[in-house]
Length: 403
Ligand code: EPS
Image (cartoon, rainbow, N blue to C red; front, side):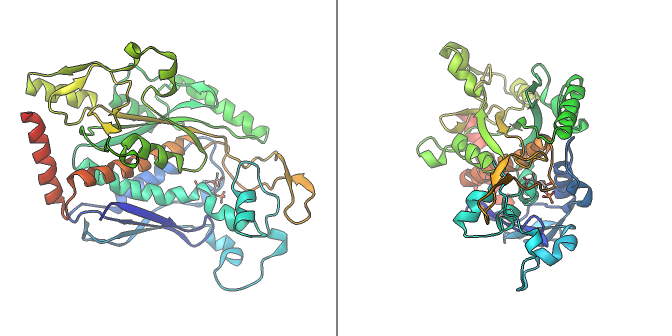
């Protein structure tokens, strides 16, 4: 069974649910691990009031017994505390909608208008409840389990913000560990504290003006072995799959790998990463650990403009992905819209929302990357138990050493 997941749940419904299937048995999964990422997803400067209401924690409802996966589907639930306030509107029992609360003024940039017509709803709430970024709490739960799986094989993932509303952060020259440490210590998840004040001011100004702020986050996966993904078929290429995963996240408008769009401005000699080989395997192991390189049989690249991916396959270097998030579509100073019922021009609806959620989006990006890499890892080394996956992986690492 290929690793796969589905999420369900409305933003103001009783809970968000994720079912992750295809995990081998024998993987240690704890609620604490998942809760740590759920808590990180709630942080960031510029979040809305909802984050004060919720304290997202997971309930593991199937697939795990006494801490370890059984090989059966893993069900995870995150309760929406806010449901208690919305129960009249959101309860599943038959009943009439409250006309005063029906959403008829679609927000430009949100799914409201298209969804209402496509699904034949007169109340755009039937769309926005699911298109809301609240759904990402379920994805972060899935990602946390995938991270636990990847950690068993020395793969770790972190994210940091590299651009907030045009204020850029240059983290070059910093070691991965340092970037991660600084991002975790920063409300804006940036590796250069000196930009924080300007970013806060930007978010404050946007808030005062009823506006919102987007940005760019970077996700880095360390310790990824050479050979995940497949160059032979378009839909198995790992860069394509990562891009799809990231692009499926709410408000993401662009994805790039490694040097990304800068490749267009640079000659080939400045883009492609020269190949080298470590003859001393002990020194290689030490160096690889330092730079976050995964198993690659002693071969390595002297730079990493490719972001760890060549020919749709991981090449052993850190996998580096960036995602551009648009400013959230809910504006407190709304744009022009048209009422679904009267067809008159009106201002779009004002829903409670965030001014900026780029740091949180980075945590969601980590989850997506974790899932896509775990899936590709299991395609290559898959087994029914962790012991079997471990045997398959170890024999591949040994094969590369002897190559
Ligand atoms: C979010 C929950 C939502 C929003 C936000 C993210 O809660 P509510 O709509 O009740 O305030 O704060 O969602 C959006 C930005 C959006 O466009 O839907 C969350 O849990 O991350």
